[in-house]
Length: 293
Ligand SMILES: [Fe+2]
Image (cartoon, rainbow, N blue to C red; front, side):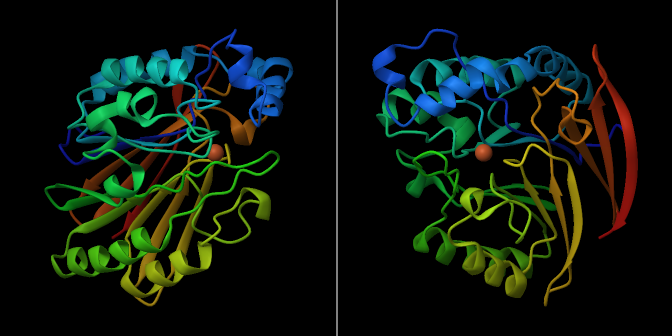
């Protein structure tokens, strides 16, 4: 990886949790998620890749680290606190930015006990509606964070942007497009059809796609599916590169789901993607690809 100031990293879906939550907190819509994690999914996740990523990120010293949601598993205040501790260890809020996922909003909880704990990592404001869309400009790059988090009843894991966020997004994309900045949109749910089943998809996917198709975004990053994904989407505006990164904590045997992180380097009119994959004790470079921007 080039020692460039225009490097940004993408990770997702840490699913941090605690072993013994209070029963009153899980004996509700969280119950299925808690039991499945305790007996099935949790056995395939570990903190070691996350710990290793903390060290690697320090040595890469990127311009930005984008985290596309589901930092917590059940959206419990204790999990938010655990995620906050990792965020602080990862870097300052000027470098690390977070968007929420459906697991972070698993069930309604007071703002002060949950998202407020992430403070400037999430953005300025006292509700997701107030904070998102969130724009941060770093040189030629404009990072645009979207919130798709909304509470669900099992077995649903749907997302929603809402009319107001979509309206703000269309004018933002137009304005930033005029400034010729590279628009990097990051969100939890995939922005393309057919990537996840309906019960896990965005409710307002069509509206989002129309906006992206007409006003453009050069790069879109998402999490949620726990699978690696790459696609070049031809929009009315031009090429849009779409990337899905798996969970950073998955250590099970399914290759597509294996923990990865992506490093993007902007070199003039080229974007280099390097994928790093978990190999049991450490990450190793999986491949690199170059895209004309
Ligand atoms: Fe998710």
